[in-house]
Image 1: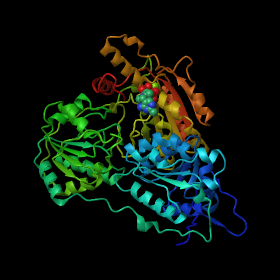
Image 2: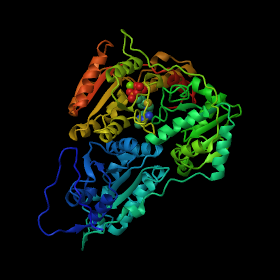
Image 3: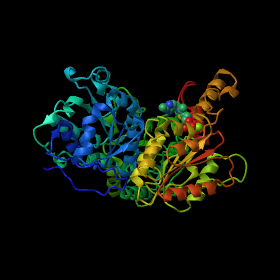
Image 4: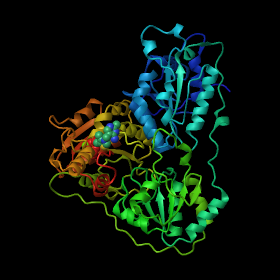
Length: 602
Ligand SMILES: Cc1ncc(C[n+]2csc(CCOP(=O)(O)OP(=O)(O)O)c2C)c(N)n1
Ligand SMILES: [Mg+2]
């Protein structure tokens, strides 16, 4: 196969390189680039570094900065976060390139997030030259590490450091295969600078990536499926816990059809992308971070529970049943146990499971739809779930901010890329798989802006307004990600729910103080982001975005948001700093106060 030089129309600013004049030469990193092209990876987000200058050159001058197109980032955390957000919308893997050991060190947090979220990212790094005789003094030595992959091995699916251009191609293909096979996850390939810069005698081979594609999704064992269908047919109060599922519309309709056929009540998780229409009569309680009292009651009342890869099934059952035996029969549809490793406990507690369908929910649901015979749906009480109305006066709350945003958006389709920790599922209904794409997997604050840019990149031209509602702490850690959005003209609305605090942790200090009989009023010390207040709108403007605020009064908030939305519609990035009262919605606050020991953390 020859290198695929089809032109693609790049919707983002033209950074077409000047052509190379003269007889072509070929280099080790061209072989790496050829493998990336063969995989048809659309973008590579990066922060540059000499360790991968060979690859950088190949991306620009061998591939012509197309498929993948470079997205320059101001921090490696953004590069991986952008890839993460992009996958969340498209289900398509992106690449990120990070410099030697130091860039990888910056990238460890978002790699962990992607790992916990079971999201594939092809992370490319570099080292060396491994051959010490080729190293420049000083810098090449400090940026060379033995076994660099060890930095991320515990939270990647695979890592490699190939020793030749041919091995590097195989490594890239294997990395993509593993990353995209469920349970998915990030992979790391470390490219020796010497390998990248070795001269090749001829143009590199171009692998046929179709022969190294992920296998079809695993199917559950037929007898297990029959068992699950029998349990569901016999259930009087079935409950579906709709967890980590795909973004496909067909799968969405199949989940709804299954719930309706079974008369099953459905719970969703605000940490995950929307899995079920929240205004459906069977959606039984607003989605929350920790299981709400209403959710716990529904789980307790169930006689059969179908978990669709519900993250932390054991914790949910424990919240509902406490130390009492779990009376419901549990069906688990998940392949996640293949990702359970020793270092990180993102696998959560060990749930009791009576019937384990070792397949992804999107595979299982249509099979259960066909395999169940239930004729009369169980009777299910309806449920009122009305988004909060905007109060006229007083301080802005997250609830009233949500109401103003709902008003400003009207019926316009939007994708909520992020909601703040203080959000409650009551604040807005999600009726489509792309209405809300969940949290970051690893609860690593600072992920919001980067993931938002990646999701917004994926949403360009979709007609959906990308909306990221972040905390001020999250925004401040990641704000320079927005420059990538303005530079590449990726429209995005960022609304900061600015309580001028790392408020989540004020609640923790409050709980510790209560436990220890110490002054609760000191909870703010070491938490508040004030004196001076930070001008978040100016930080947005500094990245090239429209920056508005701080908005402090509820009156007029909807108008400000409407104008910001218009700006986003025109193709720009807008940041609105909204001062909100410090406070968390009931279930989140209750969950934090209830769970763990006094020193527990979010
Ligand atoms: C990388 C990282 N550092 C620290 C924390 C601990 N932490 C959890 S929530 C939180 C506060 C986040 O502040 P903000 O985004 O403003 O949200 P708020 O709680 O104020 O609504 C912090 C510091 C974390 N989860 N991740
Ligand atoms: Mg805050």
